[in-house]
Length: 161
Image (tube, rainbow, N blue to C red; front, side, top):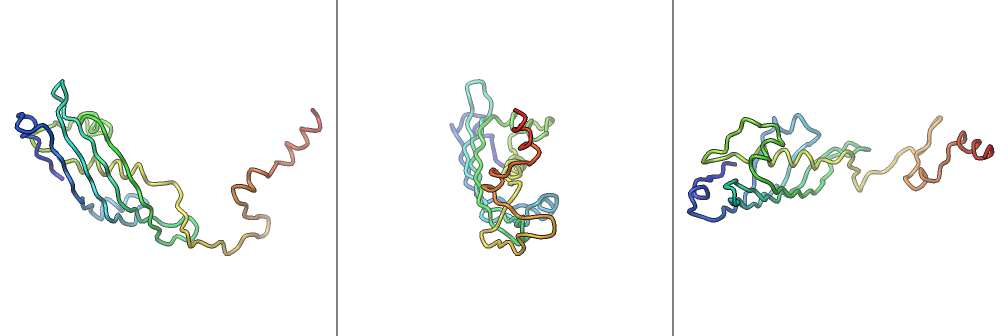
């Protein structure tokens, strides 16, 4: 997604707004937990601040398709990310220190990095059912039950006090 910054740098316009639907290559998805990305929308505004730096304010939203942590079935996970900083700082954050802000700039690496930061550690489908809830030496407990369970060894310590 190349953005022409020349009109902004020359003072022809005060701001540049974008409303784009970026496309991501399959190779990018292969190195992540993402199965697919759907309906990704990027809305943004580029302005020049008092010290002549280009500032960027982006809103990135869409749907991630991730494997369910229980069933491994595809699960839709809506996401939204807000980005607001100077272009120099944003490229430093993603590790592209040598990137010079020329007349046109590709903001796809910034968008991609912020999408990756929104990937949750665990996704559970609404349709996921626990087939087995108990087995030989184990039992599935919910988060509420987990808070109630007290280690028997710690229970013995209470008697000492």
